[in-house]
Length: 89
Image (cartoon, rainbow, N blue to C red; front, side, top):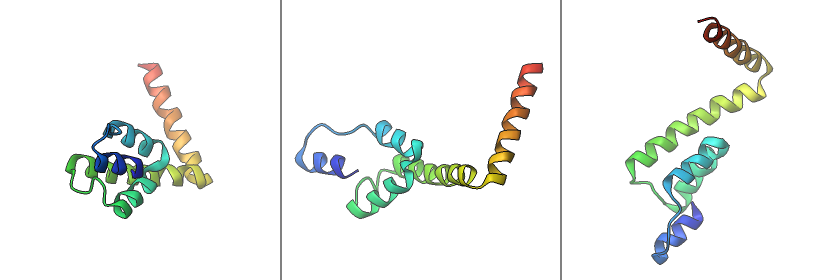
């Protein structure tokens, strides 16, 4: 967000929103949201802001599944169940 903000202020080539959202999807949504507030960048771009908010929730759930053993086991059993269902049909 910081580098994209600098580039925007200087009228240079920008980092595509898909790239920023891709990094957010891979675990950087909380940092992206903090940077968005700190640098006041892309706060009025509604599709982007809404997608980033959704990714914050996605990252939170993902962190919980990774860090809480019971949730990790539950998620794995659900995935195995879905796989078995798809495999048998």
